[in-house]
Image 1 (cartoon, rainbow, N blue to C red):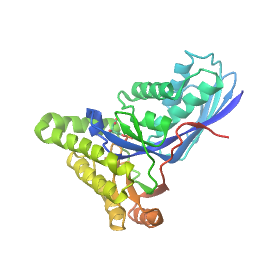
Image 2: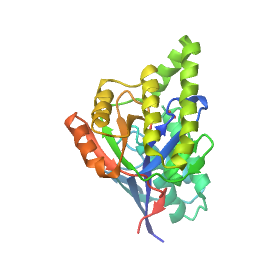
Image 3: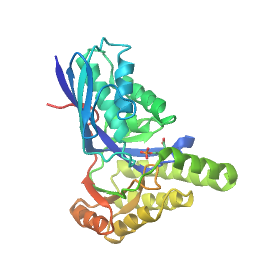
Image 4: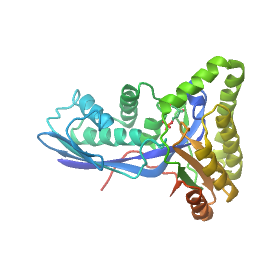
Length: 304
Ligand code: PMV
């Protein structure tokens, strides 16, 4: 085999971001937005995407460069030509870096016969994200590898959910590292206030598990809205996010909350599938970029 194309999905959080950093439970879903990586064996290293063409380049392609270097330790990679295409907005809390990392690992794994299984791929992906970002939870890389709805940190797969999902991108840059450190500071100053908030968020995820299993979307929505109130309380919301969240809720969404680190980036709304378009246009009118999607059970996979 000389050429292969692999893809991996992005993700949203139903519940639990930030609290998961302190070991609390969270529930994440892989969504049908994907990054594709086409890999051809070559004599040199060449990486290309809309970001530009280059060789091994940690400034432009830190995750892909790290995957190539890491996998060169277990495979004889003399050269590789990689083409990346994606419909996951970059740097907005939807797991774009995990998706490109996981899709590239699987492409090289299959092309060079490394024999990595899915658990190995998720673990290598997490190690690479941690090296590049300084800190990263295993959530994004695990969900991108396995697909579906996953409870973390237990890595327990739940059944799929089939309601409408509408993402609203504020277009405002969001630094996960900065927001996680803001929460850490608040927690340090006011542990008696912040610790119970974080453990309540964890309890929301635990209560939510049963509702996901029963597909009770209105009840899941109520808990997501409570989760949003608590995220606001720990300072990770903001006017741009609130604007999109209330636009979605007032148009009839079951729920709307931040997904990911917050500050900017994206919010997510759950809807009846027949109402997704209405919610999307409310988000657009409120100044966001709306994306209608759904949960995908397909984690990393080979594209035909
Ligand atoms: O914005 P994202 O997709 O990087 O998600 C961050 C989620 C946090 O819980 C805030 C941090 C983490 O590593 O889990």
